[in-house]
Image (cartoon, rainbow, N blue to C red; front, side, top):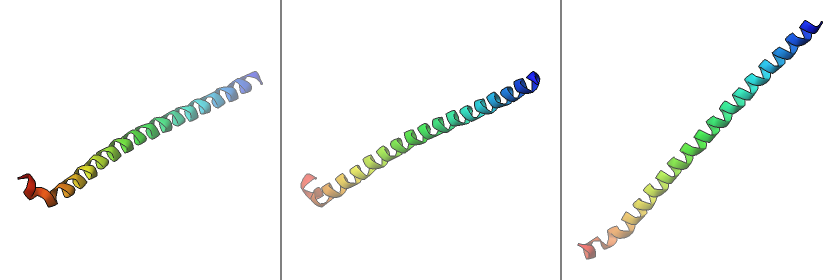
Length: 65
């Protein structure tokens, strides 16, 4: 009986460790996903801002040259 109890407790801790490891992996994955999402959105915001600046300047290009 004590051995079965020990075995069941070992199995439960093993499962708990597997679940905690998978949740840690998930949190790291979501963190890296959010980081790359922020980086790409900043990049596209800069790109769009530069594009709008160029379209704003382009009608008056003759005055600047």
